[in-house]
Length: 338
Length: 267
Image (tube, rainbow over all chains, first blue to last red; front, side, top):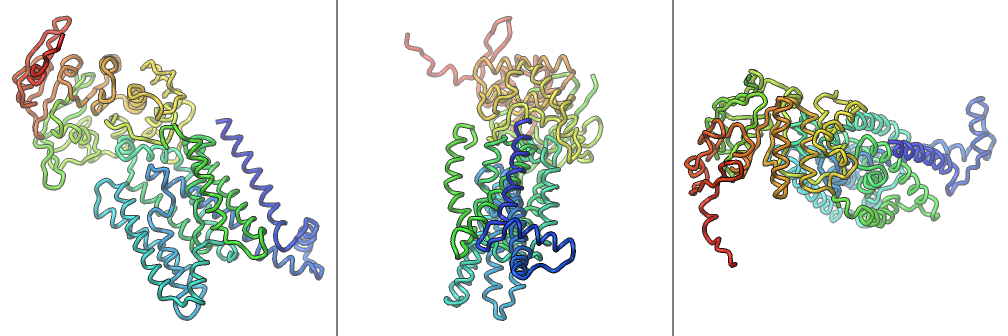
């Protein structure tokens, strides 16, 4: 217990330091002094000096929402991943196992291809198709209704492949000079498009979701024992699974709708947390959330400051995620679980 | 002794195949019940009907004179615990984490176990002489130790009835007997009723107070162990011929006919 408390305090401090640092770091230099005069101007109501106007715009409308979004998305994706791994009792499960992300990606690509270039339509289509995909998965699984956990995963594969196929159709018929690159770029996942509007939608969902998951921390332990055990311990696993799937799918869908697919976080961060503090969700959920936020914040910091052209953060998470996962597998060998 | 659990004309089907038909028996406080039957005779299904994991198609199960389907999962879980047959690969929880999960039916939805709950979990492990396992990883201990841990979890969970699904399945020769002796002791000391499915009639013969024989989904014979455990009944149940042999303390044990064929040992 003491060990996990130490990790939580340590990681929270690290997150705050990283957050403050990344407000200053970037292609567009904003110094601490600049921040001070901006704050001063904000509270006193005076206008800022001439050269600060641009900096203020960059800070308020780009950098601040983007860093906050990185924290929210990192927490949301990693904790959803942890919940999914407990639900499906499988360490290889990530939140897109039920086809959420594939549905979202198809929806977004549809929005990009549809005539009219209505960009506000893209997140809406993305969210709707993401939720549609999960609903289809759950309905198929319910129709089959034997071995609920395995059937859910298999139904998820069906839906995932179906939406990937639909995406290929869209790619094939899209204009190769205009639309295809934008679809490809969108899929890679980036926080560069983030606005306050996205943040306002995602923040309450992620916060409420995290509070709910945290409240259910002990029940998640029980659910990870399997349905028979969970039932004989007085739990209703089907209902519980449905509620948890709904909430985490909503988080993932909202994330993908505004930032594209950011891979690996939902898979590796829960593993990292389990390696640090063990599998008990009471201890590992807070550590997962903090690690996820730090990981995505750091990756996004690199994405926007490594080169003059912005690198999609999805590339960085995938490039760093794979070796980290390999290392975790090596480190946890012989725990009787991997 | 009062009846706590009663099974009345129970029937169960998976799709079109009938698994259980017209099964009736009662469970009294403080007794050890063994359910015997061939592979696929419906033993596990029957056990899962007894705590409401499976809903019977016909008939009913009554717990303290109340129909099981009218009770909530939590109400049932406080009185009936189940130790399943398979040891599922789970995340590397410690044994104490697994045992404390038995407190789940007594906690509110959003509650996590308090120090008192962990104390109860430790007490249960101590009762089974398995205190030293508390900090070990559940995935890295032996089959017998896992069985003890799950037994401790069941003890923490419910004080009235414990259902065991082939409890000696993963245990070595000696540990099988040790575990059943421990279960029997709990039966006596805590007025706990135990219903266990078993493969070995000799185990039932040695430890059970009552035996229920299930063949093709129906009860073939049931009653006090001494009355029911006859070669005739065992022959019908396993469709073989059995011989009675005399064990230590004049205890009667059984050997199937297959055991007498091809047993010439080269001296």
